[in-house]
Image 1 (cartoon, rainbow, N blue to C red):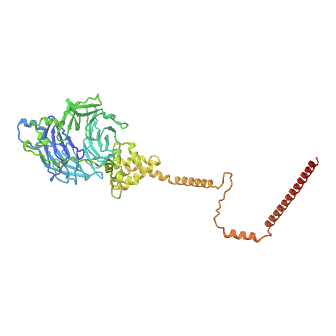
Image 2 (image 1 turned 135 degrees about the vertical axis):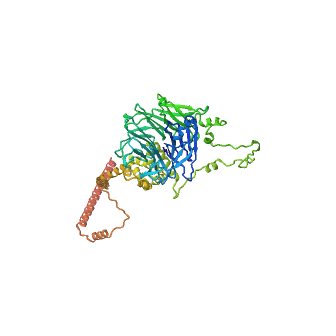
Amino acid sequence: MSLGKKHVLGFSPNGGQLFASVDEQGVLRIWNTETNTLYQEFTPNLQLSGSCTALTWVSVAGSRPKKSRKSLQAQDAGDQLHIALGTYKGSVVIYSLAEGKISRTLIGDSHDGPVTSITYDNAGHLYTVGADCRVVVWSLTDERSIAEWQVGPEKPQNIVYLQKSGTLAIGSRQLKVYDINTKELVETFTGHSGEINTISSVASTDGTEFVLTTAKMERVICFWKIDKKGKNKASACTLLMEDLAYCLTSEVRDDGQLRVASVTRNGIIHIYLLNVNSLSAEKFVKPKVSLQIVSDGAEIVEPLLAVAAHFVTDSNRSHEILFGYGSRQQLQFERFTPNYGEKLNVIVRADPKKRYAKKKGKEQPGYQAATKVQKPIVNQKNVEYNNALPISQKKVQNEVPMEARLEHLKIQETKLSGGKLLTQSKTQLLMQALHSKDQAMIQAVLSTQDPETIQLTLDRLPLDYVNPLINEISILLQGKHASVRSALRWLQALTSTHTSVLLSEDKEALREKMAVCLGVAEQRMHCLSEALQITGRVNLIINQMKRNAVNHLNDNNALILDEDPDEPQSEAEKNWSDLEEDQPDSPKSTLEDELMADDDLASDDDLATDDDLATDDGNADADTDSDVSKE
C-alpha cells in the first residue's frame, strides 16, 4: 500500500508476522512483529532503480536452497513471501526475503514517472498507478507488463483490488472504479475536497464490497459501496477522526461486525465498531475506543507515536489489535486487547529508544543496522577543547541610554517587489482557517476588501487549498449583499491567479466544482433587468423629491430672491430707466405729481391750524394776567 511520500508501509498477509516500511531516504526495513527485531534492511541502488515509492506483499513460489529441516520450518514464511516495490523511475522490482536482495526486475512498458501505488490480486498479477496517469498490469509469471490504460486527467494516488467484482478502485480527488476486463470506467464517487491519501477495501459476508478512503486536509473516513453503476455517488457512511489519517485497516468478522482502525498524524489509534447491514449516511460515527501510547518516564510523560495498526486474523486472538509505535528506525510491536467500556485507553510503555539503549552492550540481532550510530574512541587525556570565538577578559560597560536602545528595536517592514508589504498577506491565516474549518476565522479573512491584500494572499496560497477556498466562496455568494461583494472580489482574484490549476481539471469536475458560483451568477443575471428598472424608478422619485425640497421659500412661505448689489446693471435695464425719464407726461408721472400736490396742501393746512391755536392760547393767557392785576 502507499500512504504518501513519507508513509509507505504494510503488514504481511500471514497474520501480520512481518512489517515492511520505507523511510524518507528510500531504505526498506522489515521487522519481525513477534520478536520485535529488525529482520532485514535493504538500501536500493538509486542510480539503477531509484528510491522505493510504493510496496505490497506478494506470494511467489520459487526454488529453495537446501537447508536443514529446522531452518526450513523457521523461514517457511520468509521463503514464500516477497515484496513488490514500485520505484521512483517507474519500474517494478521484486524483493526476495529468502535472498535479502532484489531477485527480479519486471520488464516491459513502465511508467513515465514515479509509481504512486501498487496492489496485488493474489492470482499472479500486479496493478500499478503512476504520475503519468496510467494503470499498468504486470504478470509475475512472465515478469513483464501485459496491459495498460489511461485514468486521467487527475493524478492517481492510491489503488486497491476488489476481488469479488473484478474491479480496481483508484483514488485521486474522486474515487473511480474500473472494470479489469473491459478497462472501462463503471462507477465514480465524489465527496472528498482533497486528494485521497489512504485506501482500503472490505467485503461483507453477503458479498457486498466497500472501499474506505481518507483524504488530505480532512478528518473523516468515507465508506463507498461498490455496485458497478452510477456516477458522482455519495458515501454510504462517514467516520470522524481527531486528525489526518496515515494508516487504515479494516475487517469483517463472522457475526457481521465491521471493525475499522485508523492511525492519525498525532499517533492515536481510533477503533470503530459497525454493522455492515445498517450503515447510514445521515449522521457521523465517532470512534468506539481510542488508544494512546505514552512513555513511562518518572518526571515527564511523553506521547509515543503509533506508526501502523493491523487486526489479528488468528481465531484464538481475534479480539486483539496489533500496532507498532516508536520511530521508523526503532519500532516496537505489541498485541493489545482494547477495553471498549472506556472511550480512551492509555497504554504506558517504555520508549523504544531507551529499550535499545539498555541493550546496547548486548548482542541484539539487527540493533546495529537499526541505529547506525557509532561513537569514535577518544582518549580523554589527549583532548584539547578550543573555543570558536576569542574570550575577552575585559568587562564591557553598556552606557547606551534606554531611548537609544528602544529605537534600535523598531521592527523594519519587509517589502516585496513593487513596494508591497509582506505583512499584508493573510496566507497563513487563511490556510489555518481552511484547515480547521473555523467559520469565524474564514469570515474574518474573506471580509478583506483591499485588492492588494487579496492578491498577495492568493499568490502565496498552496494549490491544495484552492478547492476548499472555492467551497467557502460558494457559501458566501449565497449570503447577504456585503458577503457577496467580498466573495466576488476573492473569486475574481482566485480565477485570475490560479487559472492553470482550474483549467487542468476535467470539464465535468470543473463544472461541478463551480456549480454554485455559476448558478448564483446566472440567477442574478436573470433578475438584472427587473432590478435596473426598479433602480431607475426609485432614482427618479428621489431626484424629484430633492427638487421639490429646494423651493427658495422662507418660514412664511414667501419667495426670496437674492440680488447681488455689486453686480453691474445690464444694458436693457439702463435703457428702460432712460425711457422712464424721457416720458414726463406719462400716467405714472402725472399720478405722482398729484399725490405730491395733495401732500403739500395738507401740510399747509396743518401749519395754518397750528398758528390759530397758538394765537388763541396767547389771548387766553393775556386775559388771565389782566384779571389778576385788577384784583
